[in-house]
Image (tube, rainbow, N blue to C red):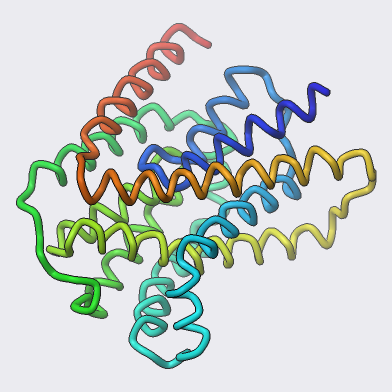
Length: 260
């Protein structure tokens, strides 16, 4: 039962924090260390990503369908251009990022940095460029920022939305492009993890139930987070998230200072 509850909890955390600008990896590292949870394993991490992938597909099915029907169209090309720098950074620094995520020693500072980025971009003038006006340069810059967000407590969605806003893209369309760009990134990460899983297959059928339940909760909470974030970006501000990650970062640094 405890294993099942842990999987449900981590699934909810993954789904919510993947799309809210507060860092999913940072929260997973934090909660696992804070509550003494054992590492869920590569398979569960892969399935959590699959759950969030389901959420993106459901919310943006019309755009995904358009890409599938027009694989050489502009949207498809933008996603390819934006994914290239993400993939290059991820593959080049994979071992380094995995070590940082495992130790969690820098996540306090990274949460603080995420807050600075969110607050700064919300203090800028709002852009008016629509989704159809997004350029390949925009995609390249946002994709590079997405690659930098591989650091555990730097929010991927926060950094890519911020990058789009700094490029003068309309708020709602900035969030839309950020979430669409997450699709190939999540697919790529899941593919790499799946390759690694060939060497470490699931041995016990007992693990299947908490695995599937955790994945389901990641999909549901991810769907809720995307819908909520789209409303916040369109009609609100991300400064509340900045305050949250600042408080979290300071708490973590304080605990680290006390040797915990």
